[in-house]
Structures are given as structure tokens and as C-alpha cells.
Length: 282
Image 1 (tube, rainbow, N blue to C red):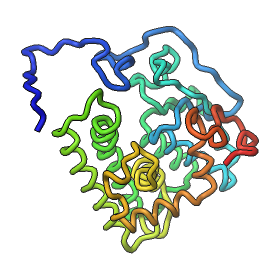
Image 2 (image 1 turned 30 degrees about the vertical axis):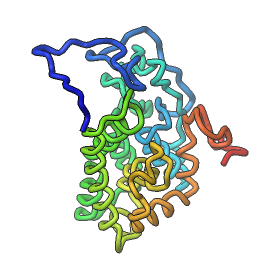
Image 3 (image 1 turned 120 degrees about the horizontal axis):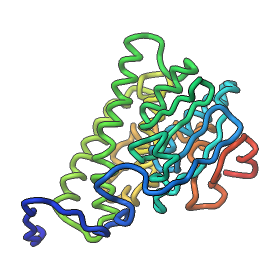
Image 4 (image 1 turned 45 degrees about the horizontal axis):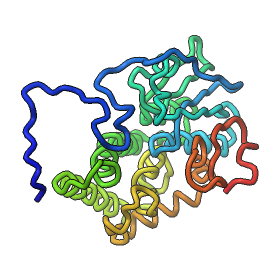
């Protein structure tokens, strides 16, 4: 066990730069730190994001909608560099007071409609275009249950396991063990659920798949936290098959490139304004 004898103080005090990859931008208060307006493109839908798992959820849905012929789903996507604190600009905070990506501005309404939180954006767009959300009440309830499952469970994978396994300033046995146990439970849950299903809700591909795949699908494909071996993801055969099935979709391949600024340059589309931005990519 870790020999750390840390005892919490009676009243916690923030110390800037308290360790970890994101220490330079984390702080205990909300609101804008600087004045800067957001750029705007020509389309009604304006997305301000980054190709993290939460950001990819939304770009996958938008690309799927466009592939289905919804011209009004065309969008402009601008990078929000969270490592540089762009999420704390006055323009971004006006759309999302929580200062987290992604954030959407729908200018097709009067006044324009801001939407934040990735799950809320998925639901907003699915209902706006009446696509990728079941019309049957029972199936819709199942879809929303799994959508909100991801929103509730994801922090244990990202801020819990991901932080302590990949980003903390030093390995710590207790939190790694604690969050690894929970992530393994989640992977087992998904694997059992997908044993006899093509997609999360059965035969219909929905926003539930789009919410879950960028986290758990990418994880079992070995592209998240470099943790595939540590988590023995090969054990989850049904989940892995689903992850590959979703990844094979052209819109998913495009969606994961949008607002991506790392990795293979051939898989990066820093800003997205039209389908031509994907030319010679992938």
C-alpha cells in the first residue's frame, strides 16, 4: 500500500499547479478569465469543441446526419484549446457557463439556442432532426437510459481511472485499484448487454451508441489511456465486436477527425466547415 500519511486540512485551500497534466488550467471557481469572442462560420450550427471523447460524440452525430441527407445539419466546428484555457473565454462562457467542451450554438432559432453538455447536445440534435432516436416509447426509454448511463458512468472512466492511471503526477495504488475495479465492472456490463445485440438498443443504431463508443469503444480498441493490456480488454469479445462495427461507419471515421490536433496528421481536421475538409484524409 501507499505510505502516504496525508491528512486533509480542516479547511481546504487551493494551491495553483497542484500536480497532474491539467493542473495549469484547473481552478475552484467558474466564469470567464479573459475577454474573447468566438469565431463564427456560415452554417446555422456552430460547434466549439475538441476531439476528446465528449467532443467526438457530437461530431459523429452531425456527420451521421449529413450522411443521411440532412443539409441543415451542416456545421462549422472550431477548436477550443483546453490546455490553453480557451474554454474560459467570455465568448465560450456565454454559451457554456460550465466551461467544458463541447458547446453548440444553433443560429437557426431566434434568438440563437446555446446547448452544452454532450448528452444534451446529442438529445437536442436527435430530436431536432428526428433521427437516431427511437420513435417507439419503450425503445426511446432504453436509448435514453443508456445515454444517461454513459453520462453518469463516464467520469469514473475519465476523471477517475484515466486521471490516476495516465495523468496523475505519480502512481497511487488505492485510486488506481478503486477506479480500475469500477471500469472493469462497466466493461463487463456492456459486454454482457451486447452479447445478442448489434447495437446498444438492438438492431437500431442510436445516439446511445454515439455516446458510449468514444469512451468505451475507443478504450477496447486500444486508443484510450494506453490501457488495453492493463484492463485485459480482450476478455470483452462482444463489446470489442460492437466497437469495430461502429468504427467501420464512414461518419464515425470522419467525426473522430474533427477538431483533432494530435496524432497522425492524416487524421486531423482542425476546423470543419464542409465535407471538402476531409479530402485526402483517413
